Image (cartoon, rainbow, N blue to C red; front, side, top):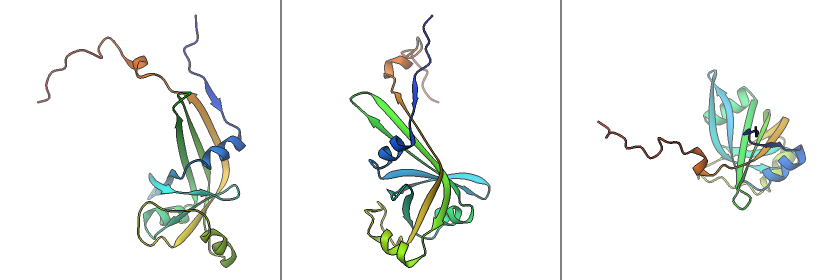
Length: 154
């Protein structure tokens, strides 16, 4: 009998960083009042860390008050029909030292949303993991009921 379990390739840390450098949008997971919350953000890789800008608010407050955070970034390669996902877990630190701020200001970091985002935050990883896997064709999910007529919504 053939094994139907799809192959998932675990990525080496250097592969994860290479993939992270190809994107600029990720999702930051933080804890807000003991509940998980997720925020999309623009980021840039800077010497094996992640840097993003923020305005004061829930995201910044949660990231700095409970600095254990996670960032997830993913991508899709259409030709080989492969997807990848990288997760960085670590701690968030406000960038406050003048030398660090001067270096950070020059990073190619351009938030999509306008407004004052005058605070820079660095995610210092404690773990970097990633995986790559083949994307199933939509037909693989069809069943005998896929084309069944449905009763109208009432």
